[in-house]
Image 1 (spheres, rainbow, N blue to C red):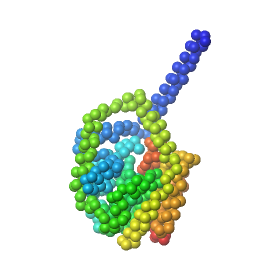
Image 2: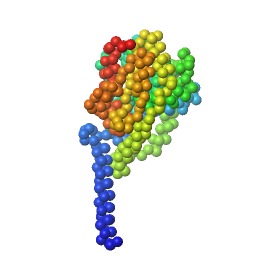
Image 3: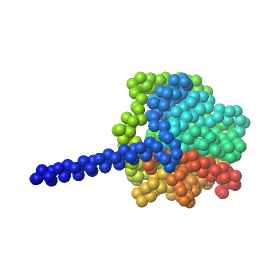
Image 4: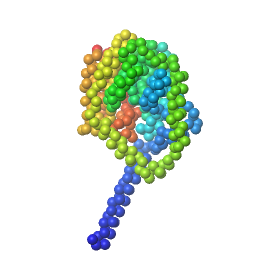
Length: 383
């Protein structure tokens, strides 16, 4: 091969590589500063934020999966919520880190809501109901309080399914409830139910009508246990953490790599969903009996995942019809958020802006859900 040809090949390869690098770094810059959204993202990790906030507020906590709580089952009980009356660092899907001020039992409520004689609305669900990745007053329960002017008790906790949510209701239910909304998120609630149905402790809430851990009377013990675990877990990490400068993340195309990882991860979620767990109907029947005995209005709310809209051609979740059939057969009011979202011309605006195919709702999404359940509560039950 002539030297001239080798030189030309080298120049072409150099141009190609420079073009690739220029494209990658341009895209990385765009991810860091999204001009169409007109905000600069908080690019810190949760540990970096935790460390910074801890300097001025010793009471700051990090939200964690309830899988953590099962690790301390050996203490003789399993907490169903978080640390009480603490600022809790949750997540960042909308450009900022959301922080929740927990109530006396570790849920996302203004503590004064528990002083009321009657709860006009009680919400049961996972992280979507907890209000993950937005701040008050933009979570579902806060919006509902605002538009209704009524008492709203939010018992939502991330990483739970209808089984643990039923157990949470058994432990923390207000004595008087007017409207009970049970939320089902199609993304992972059924998988979570499959895991929870194997927990011996949770099975007791199904088989024993009077079973209780008396969690509401043991919050001091719960706080001590959770804080001990958190301190042990995070103190070592905080000592080791070295705050990465933004330019270091830029040079390593940190956010572009995360975007690719998220895309690959979302394709895992596109696989065929597990069939509806058999315990789902059993728990719904118990909730139906509870609503009859306490003379309250029971609603079942179906929440769609964003994969349904990001990847319409590949989406395979066929449980929607099965879920609706079970709910209808029990004469429980079905609130169809999927149908509501389907009718929107801008459905992707209802989901968090930093996620590709999975993640939580945006401020607009949470507001849309809150408005719908409020409107439903004003109508007579159809059955």
